[in-house]
Amino acid sequence: MRKAGMEERALSDYVAAMLVAFSHTRQLAPPGPVTPGMVANARSFTYISDMLDTASKAPPEQVFLIRSHIGNYSLFFSGIMAERIHARVQRTGAPGIGFYEAVGGSSFAMAARHRQARNASLTPIYEQLSERFRAVRVALNQLAENLFHLHDTPTILTKTNMA
Image 1 (tube, rainbow, N blue to C red):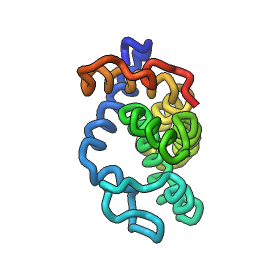
Image 2 (tube, rainbow, N blue to C red):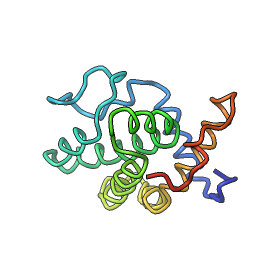
Image 3 (tube, rainbow, N blue to C red):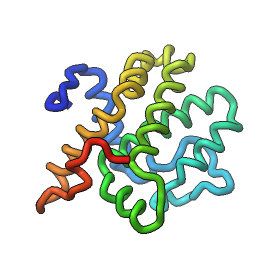
Image 4 (spheres, helix red, strand yellow):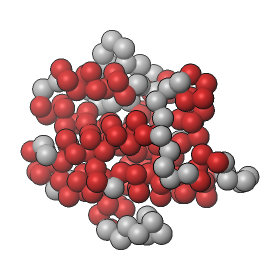
């Protein structure tokens, strides 16, 4: 994160904690009960559209948790698993990185305005993640490339303006 010009310790700590949490596949599932359209097995990965639908019908306390999760999920997938997203775009026409940036950024913005964010002192972090989602995503792309790939850099990870 520091290489990307992000010196805020709280932001770096939050992103590191998110990465640790998402290293356990059960964290990929959204908070709360499984609803129709959502997958009980976290390894199958829930669709963001299903989480957004659930959030639209949830009570305010649950909306905060779901929106926070969508932001984290979008950041994790677009940051660490960008190649998977790109492959799905090519194979099935699934949404690209730009979709994850838009939904993740807006979810962090919505979560930042929630009372629970203020109570947990997360408002400044969520605001930063909303405003700087792309920069954090690119930093995570570089981290993933350095840690997980021992071959030449895939083209997808060298582009910072992916759609």
